[in-house]
Image 1 (tube, rainbow, N blue to C red):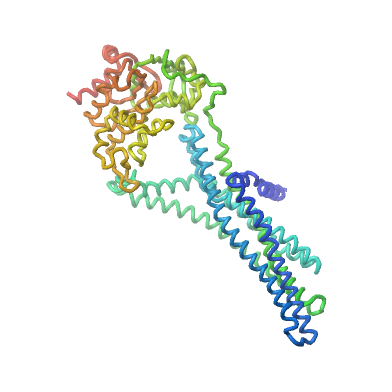
Image 2 (image 1 turned 90 degrees about the vertical axis):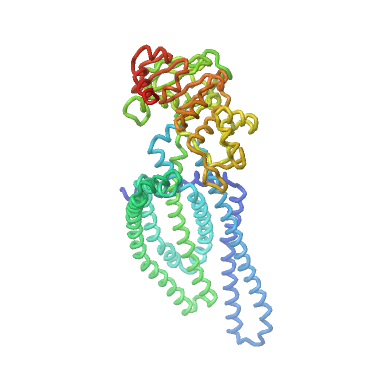
Length: 607
């Protein structure tokens, strides 16, 4: 019973190809139609050529059998028949060449289309997925299959249709000779089909099982080759260690994969003897029919070639079905990724987004727990920020400061409680409009290996790159003097990935990222450790006139350096996900609590 259910499941999976075909159709409909037209010609033209060969042989045999005579009498007729046969052969070559050209081009189009789907889905899914290892397993499996599986599936489907059409004609031809020959044709390829289906399953489930192992190997490969790890790799002599671990993982993967391949090869070898025995049995039957003069010499050639072509056609047909099954089986990895749904839901009737704040930001009774975490990251958070206020969030690592910022940017939604902006819950605003009204710099900001101008303009791409606004943002962040010393100023390519790239210091990269936040010109600006990589002078430049630089906007600053947040209107000290102290710098120092202890601890290093 299990075997029958397994076979039914295989057939069902093989037939579930409409999704992949939809990908191919959507990528370029004209190419799909052209492929189908050429497929029909590829199926029928060889058979027409074969039939012409039969006519030629029979005509020559007839002339020779009649005693011959003057060959010129029959030569023109034979020439004409050869010209017709040559025309069919030429047409086959032209159609095959055109099919190869279209298939190659279509392969590139489909591959690019699949990359687009992957990239769009990667942008669409919420930030939550990027903090979940299971997501990276799904992404890795999807990336493995997306680039080539849909085109493989199309190729196999077209091959199936072409072989099926050819087989239909050839089967009718062989049935006219003897039904047993037609039966031998079908039976000869069945063992190989079952072998393919069986081991396709094994390979698929093995690959899913070893996804994390493959990602581990890829991680070591990345550390061995990228520029982020290059310095420590050499200073700590980590190269041989990582290389050994990479080899160990790859050897494990190669060994397990080749064990499956070895068993498949062994099973395939066993089917060869069966296939050859049936094939030559059919040839002997056709030869006997010729010797007994049941069929002519031309028909002998026709049936031998028809059986050979039929065997190729049915073999190709059944193997294409097996490939369809395998392709669709592995495409389930792609479907699994593309079927991911956002967890941050967009408002159906979003409230109008304020361009200037009236009552400000308010957080009430907020609790938050990461989806994959065992404990809450934030507990009962309550705070209020008035328009134009500068608020600082301080506390030790892991206290929940950055988590709170993620919630303010709606990268996550609260588990319970609410965050309101001008009295409206953040979940009731359009998510894109909300984020467009926040200028943010996270501590893990990105180094874009592109021009200086683009690095700043990325802060507000919905507007054209305005040189004056970009210069103003660079001046406010303190990076403009550095840019003026670069060879092409704001057109200078940064980083070392591309030719003529100029590298910046970590502190200079941070100022550049700060420029993006300033360029956005949003009513709220959030800075997460904005000066962590800057020296004391650079930090002083950023905060000396900070209130003037933000031009009356609401600002939230996270910093471990308590000296930088003294100018804040209100400071909130977080500890283990809770607000334990709040007030101005003077009020918190007078309280003589944990903030005061931390500030005095840092201050002693400046005495």
